[in-house]
Image 1 (cartoon, rainbow, N blue to C red):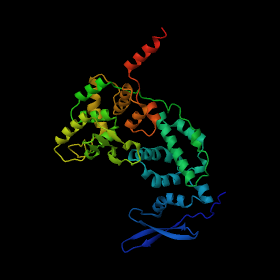
Image 2 (tube, helix red, strand yellow; image 1 turned 135 degrees about the horizontal axis):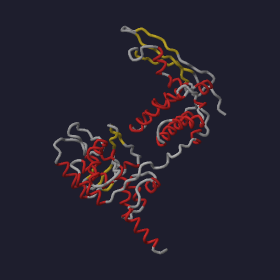
Image 3 (tube, rainbow, N blue to C red; image 1 turned 90 degrees about the vertical axis):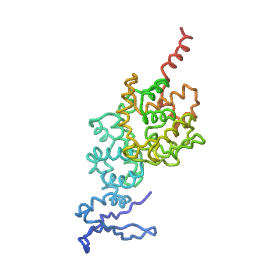
Image 4 (cartoon, rainbow, N blue to C red; image 1 turned 180 degrees about the horizontal axis):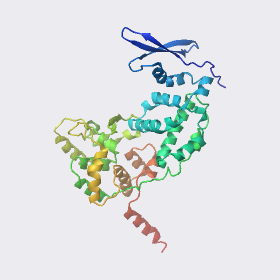
Length: 373
């Protein structure tokens, strides 16, 4: 059994005069590998931190980490302390889009409700009762529950809590696993009609998304250097989402090499030759030089064109879902579908994406029902 260190430290803050004004020094101890305590000093600018209270607020997460292994730290640490450490150590390691979502959940909902509650007092029933009263949908409630669950997992990792079952496993959000929006699948004929109805470069964005099954963030994030036109291949190296570029890890399944149809390569090379500016992006805005906004294109171009063609519920992800359905129609093996869609788990490919086209469902039904009637 692990013995807890008894010494809890608050650290000391003192004002240090400088030639121009003053600064703050935060003094605390760390334990060296040999077991001896060593004094450390951290300096804070008085312009950014004008009061001692501002300094204390800035080091809350740091103190939580320093006292994580003490009895006092386990008993007294609050969800606010845990959040501060999460924002400093965990959040920066996540993708930009995930950072934005998690930061919003923490700022708007979790911190205001739970900041001053001791970590050990966060119970399943308390969270459930709170979630039930929140004025938003099941999916948002589930994301909030998952965020709290992650915080409690980290509390165990950082030794604020003893390792055990996460109480959030007991909290269920009714309706969170159901698809609230009807899945839109289009036929190859509808896809061609949509491409023909759109002006450049939006028709090319749709063409690339549909022919390769790319997410819109991947399509917008394409660079010319990602293509090997001699070998007819593409490697997705980055995405463009929420106005920022996010590099993909080399181990990410999304970054796998894809085959590109020779005709698509011809179309893209022709598009490249027409560019008046030397941009590294395949789809760069002529005004900004950076990738386009997916939401603006969807609202101003894709949806109006789809409406004229009688296509309801069109979104960027329609092309990726349809891509999987088209592969199923072509009798592509599931393992190849998984690789072409760059999923790490084949269950995602088979259970989440796409559906059988209506005409094929009717044909299959006639074959089965014909034996029964």
